[in-house]
Length: 251
Image (cartoon, rainbow, N blue to C red):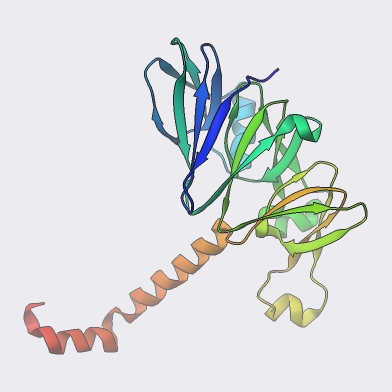
């Protein structure tokens, strides 16, 4: 039985979740996610169930260790966790989804004590190795609240029975376990090579709940890396020569 926690999500593009704990209640979080906490909240960092649990969490993009925050005071105690990059925090009540929910690797932020974080794989391992973010998933189980982070704008979809959705593997954040999930090769030779969407797409079939994100971290990182390489190559180019002429040799 998971702890019953009160919470509020604060902010817009760089959100935090503030969790209010009663005496004896606690929350588990990705190591390094804590923003602030009040007196009488005790931190306990460990593997969350042994070495094997830690290694499995590393496969999903999380850290080897997980931190538990327990409130040992009287009245109410608050602890807050921040998102790692611009985007939104999604609150998921696992009790409403038969006690389990799947999410993209490294999406987990925090959850009430009693919620377990495990690993799940796609059906087709061959496609998974080339399918990017869609190969390894996180499985959240329990009957409490869990919080995941996603980049950019969040789109919430409720798929009817038999309804399908095809999307970039990185744009999928989380979905209920009733959803049929697969990774498939993009049709068409030119589409695969020149379409710019990657070789594989995620295929979802309802019924069930789906959360999508407009800005996967991998896409953001690729753009930053490309811009950094361009800037480095251009250091000795026209822009640098122009600055030299304006500022002289003493720049």
